[in-house]
Amino acid sequence: MLSAEFPPRWGGMGSTVFHLSSSLVERGHRVTVITRSGSGDPPPQDGVRVITVGWAKIPMEFTRSYGRRALSALEELNRNDPVDVVHLHCPMISWSDSQFLRCSQKIAPVVSSLHGSWLGERDGLVAAGKAKEAAVWANPNDLAILLTARRYARFERSAIKGSRICIANSHATKADFETRYDAPENWDCEVIHWGVDTSMFRPLDADSEDDIAEYNEIRARYGANENGTRLVLAVGRLAARKGFGTLIRGFAKLQDKVPKSRLVIVGRGHLKGRLQRQASRLGVGGKVAIESGMPFESLAALFRSADLVVYPSFYEGQGLIPLEAMASGTPVVTVDDGPLPEMVDSSVGSLFSMGDIESMSDSMASELNNDSKRREKGESGRERVIESFTYDGNAESFESVYKRAIS
Image (cartoon, rainbow, N blue to C red; front, side):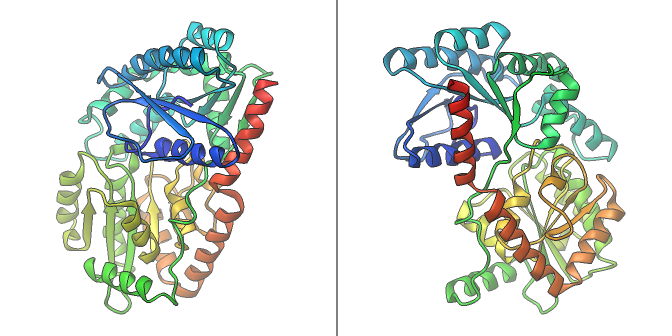
């Protein structure tokens, strides 16, 4: 597998590659991951070899420099230990037509996972700007996407042409590629939704003294321990397209409907100060906490201690946060757009119109003001994840894809 993200460089892609690798090893396969250097030592995984390569620390261009060096490392690996199938995780690796051909002819057939498109990212940023999200033009990476997405989209066209099989992480992503890139009629593309860690992200155990003590401590920390107070959680990178500015405006509106509510945002990024100042200007500064990050175990405990998770993103290839909330037995409110309705509906939460503050606050209030229905939706969400969104299921599906690519 070639992935620009791999732990400890976490992210949606890094998480899925890490867990898919382990699940494939459990099924008897050997996995090598070629990733970018500079993030530290990866966590130990039996049966998974990790090779790191250098890359140019230039927004967007890193996808080309990493791609070239990853291909060279792959060729060296293949000389010593022949590879059966090559799995690329796009769009954070950019190969040209000739590089796909070189790999297919000299090494092994290519399977490309499509985690989303650069043009989709660009459009998400434009939508965020129209919704008055903070600092759309202030982040170098976002600025690079806005200005160069069309140039780097040509490498996504190469992935369509040069891969034996493509795997989209949602029906929305598949449709995005078909529409933007004029995919050929015989294009072999399946949809496999990524799963989540259902052992880490789990519901509160009401019979566990440790769970209850942790629940009470978390809610007291954020001022949600008083009877009737509701704790709302949002998780994601603090970047414009994630929609946290819109969320804070929606949360300020929520005070008219659920005055005893608190909001916790967890994510790394350059917008923390801006978001805190925005919350203060709207009069909810004392009710909004922004955490720059926390260990996964602590984040999982926060998921199962919250009353509601809100995911206001302006663009996703799939979006894993709603699934982590559902696995934790916590209902989700998210946008009625792109891939998110493929996971979330009225049985596990609710959907609101993208960028619509009134629609968002109404959806949050509807969930927070109905305790019994919220518990039912939490249980339904957990059941849905166990049934359809697990890493074991991903491994089984990709094993079938690999066999078909090889044959």
